[in-house]
Length: 280
Image (cartoon, rainbow, N blue to C red; front, side, top):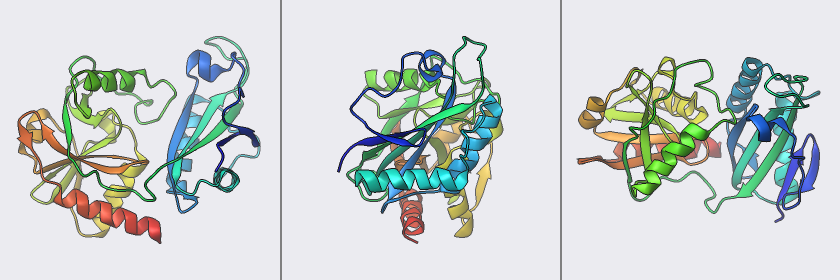
């Protein structure tokens, strides 16, 4: 196993300097990224990741790199997997605007990097111990077209994660500008009440998560009702289960929100369905 990365189609050692200081990703966070789980040597949910990446690039007015399409996107990741010998890992595809300029760019053509690091678990696995969480009170997320995309400006989520760490929590719940609960600092949010799944609507400003969509589809395919709607703190207290989703870790169940305690029956079932879908 050796750590490598792909920069605009060329492989480089991951432990050597590879980017110049004047790139727009560093200076302005001018770009977006996709985090993907590699299982058995192949990236999961490529179609969904490519759809979000290309839609986000159009929103940010970044032209896709020359020759880059869905097939090249997947093939480039697989080539990096094979060259590095990492069959189970975390892959990050970063797209950023090339060229110079300040807030006003000189050009719009995109550049990209692909990173891959190994993970110990071969598949998505449910956490053994439930997470401890609370609501982050310091800032609220605005609702706009950028809300659902993974841009390089992640300071909001970093501040939320720092707040959790300082209080000995595993994660925290974020609110939008209306006070609705929308997501965690590292994933989308689901609650379970009487066997029914509820998740915040994209119109409430949550991230359009790839794993969020997979869980919704798996639930519907197995006869589990799902509602996309606004959620508030009272809904958390009435729920039987609460869990978070992201493309790397899959499903993480919450054990405690303040004095409220949760089970993880349905989240465990959904994780089993998720692992089975990746095995096919």
